[in-house]
Amino acid sequence: LGTRSAPDLVRYTQMASGLLRTLLKIFPAQGERSYSTKAIHAELESLWNELPLDRRRKIVQDLATDFQRLSILIFYIANRGNPRVLRDDDRTGRKLASNQRKPESTLDLYRFVSGYFISRMS
Image (cartoon, rainbow, N blue to C red):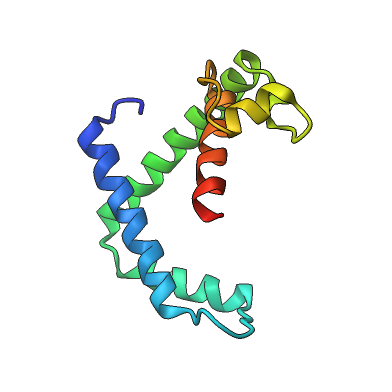
């Protein structure tokens, strides 16, 4: 979370959830979809230009900081966990995915959460 608080995390999660809900409404659930990267880029550019300049500068500053933190976190996660748990043929990974074992590292947690969502979709 860095310097962000739990309420910030909730707010950001709600924003992401709202965005995804809107995308589900906009794009058809059935049929073939074809969107060019040029069209998506143009739409994002249009939305970006609607923001006030000071807000855009703040977003860019926050993103730069977040990307620096992300590289540190990825390094930390990779060194603290066992990547084998992400493989389908790993016994510990299967136990995590079936909620028969508690996660002990971030990678374990990813496998645990993945198993939860897979079971919910089945």
